[in-house]
Length: 405
Image (cartoon, rainbow, N blue to C red; front, side):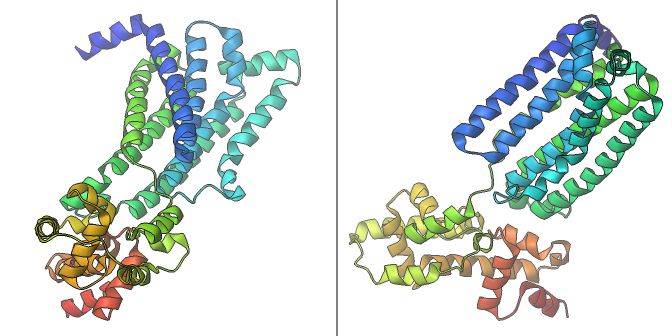
């Protein structure tokens, strides 16, 4: 069955290449305009990733259809293109998870090996006509050149595999430890996105090295091309599902104006003055609530707290006002009267109490401190440590050691 299917695709192999080329170029165009519209740097980098992939697959299509001249022109760019894919994907994932990344010039060094190789190729291709013709033909390149490209691909694959795993461990601890359902649900698209990029790079590296070693024709790589059609669509899908890292500086400013708790103030570079701001707001005249409305809001908010809605990082006055629904000022008034505390202080207290329960469980050692912080709604380990120590008098690590004694 599988063999018959492969024979069918080999017979219609031209259209398999055409579908992949059109797909990658369309995705590149889509993410470019979507990135411009949404002002998303990560989507613009993803557009570049698909553009590079499209050029590589277009070269394969020209080779497959016998367009030797056009294929030869793109062959000058191919080795450098292979070395561009991993840095582009890595920078995309870094920017996707950290909105402040990618704004320094030294981060462009990731593209340096590919740029050097493309420059060398262009110099070699302009030496003389016979050398250019030999160089532009895939099988006529010097053996040493082929070995160097293979070694560069292997080194790059190992290097970026390490960087990818390190980044994934930082952004999604649940992928490396026994996950709980809320933590896994929060990180599943990110994990799937990392997995899709990793699979893409492994298949690309294996295909290129395999083709170079055995001088394979394009008919022999049809299974790889079919896999790329699926994987590129998965990357696009998971990219749309996984939201960009929020601009936390803007979020901090918004929190100060709307009394919304900051999800990760440590990255904003500013002191967390939300509680002080809450106190100032509490001194202002409040809109009056009738008794019936106040009881309804109190019951609705209490129910959400019983359901532990506060462990969601998005839990805020704005979030509550959409869930209840009601005006955020009314909800703030109800919460303050319920707890006798500003909203942000009350939420932090609920989260820290939940963290204490997790730290006293028998299997608490299975999770990292950062993972426990994420399980109760914190997106920053340092913010979690600060709030925990403020309320309990010791850091989560110290508290865990004390419980284990």
